[in-house]
Length: 178
Image 1: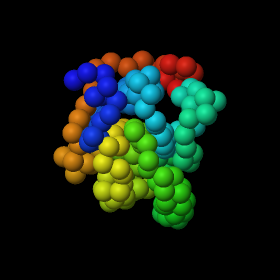
Image 2 (image 1 turned 180 degrees about the vertical axis):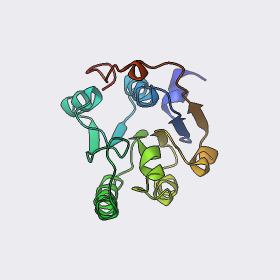
Image 3 (image 1 turned 120 degrees about the vertical axis):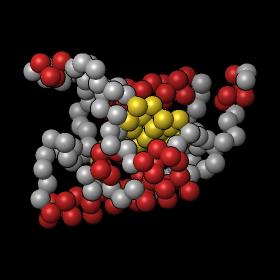
């Protein structure tokens, strides 16, 4: 396939980056950089993260970047009332942010854990797949990705942890892990 054919994609595919290892977001962001380098339009939806290097880059570069900022359920246990409130807040965010899907590539970062922890209904992902333009490439990241979404995807990469400095007490570092 020549470069021109790659830019003029007829059918957008679905990518999943999942698993317990480091690098799921990095893989998705790398795909976005490649797309931007080829002149494709991108939309970034980042869930449960805040104050990340990629956030600062995309916000300061004028790209379509949106963020759902509540603390990641991996780091906070929500009681039932908080969970219901979080679900309602997420639905308002989701309905607004998925109103415009006319992009070449859309990345939804950390959707897997949001579904696994009951904040996000996985039917929203299937609805989005049905509503997105046919040419739009969809990239989904996060551990605990439901099997139903994995089965729907065209690309699935499972990133496994073999060794991580966190296990030795080294906390996340600015510019490297976030």
